[in-house]
Length: 408
Ligand code: SF4
Image 1 (tube, rainbow, N blue to C red):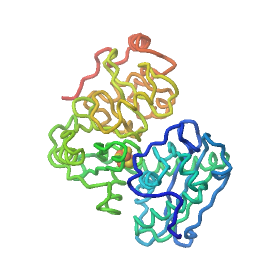
Image 2: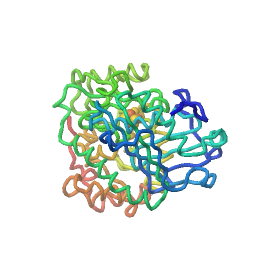
Image 3: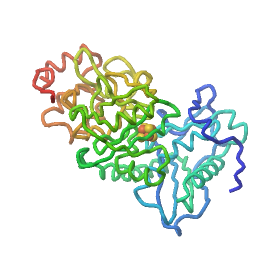
Image 4: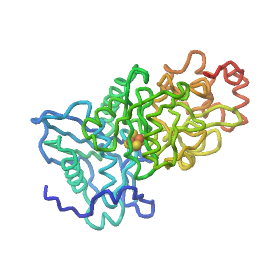
């Protein structure tokens, strides 16, 4: 690795957004179904150090302005590496990708979205090999626990499709590990400030019952991240005194929120969408939004096409919810949070949900409280709030019937 790259690198490029007009090519994102990034720890003999492999067309063979599938697979080895560190190092891709001049990284896992601008392409960032070299440099210089690294870029659509299910299995296994542990069982939570380049006052507070907004950092991952790099973006929070067990307000969380948001907000409710809701950066997988006509909530995920029941699209709503501000009635969240027993606890949790995309409802069928599944409307049942209210009355949604007691 010679350390000489066609474009500049450094934290000054974080937050650089690439607009459509400046786009050379993009990988993943909303126009592409097959995409993921995955970092795996291997034994030293399984990693050919500094090897970069490209399977499928490279950037020069791509058509300007187009979107392409991508599997970005990073294999690392090192004596001090621990399995728990995989998700944390994988998430560093968000940081390092955005350190590259003319390159943009958004989202995570099988939702990932990367863009390369025309200027960087013109300067010589015209091969995935160049991007791989930069990533290797950043990973090894910032994380000295990595002794060997190899990167594979797969752009062949069929091959990405073939690899995707096994990557999803890995994500699922990671998420499963954190299920069952309660906030009351631990003394510490974790904060992550990795997205402050795009949302300067945002931090994620990660607890055993609230996975980070991006879905890529669970409480266990927070613990591993802090161990890996105690001066890094993930910090330990002494949870302190619980001021409100229903909304989940802790003195330790308030303190870190005030500090990391530079006083923009000083209180956080971890499980409420009102008063002092958890902030949203831009990497959330879904938004839980208040529907005044039903005095209840809907959920929209990033992949939902078109407008939802309140007449807005995911991207419009994301614009209102994101940026690191506390926006009452909006919660950017990871879909895994729907499995948390404390999901939206202060407002009635699942029993206050009245609309969600059919595909998400089906995915989370087993955590939907008994008798509720058929009473939550989808895009097939209600296209606007009039139809929604009519549906809820017709099926007798427990919230509409006044059968849900809010915790006090
Ligand atoms: S969404 Fe939250 S946890 Fe995920 S990288 Fe951004 S700040 Fe960190």
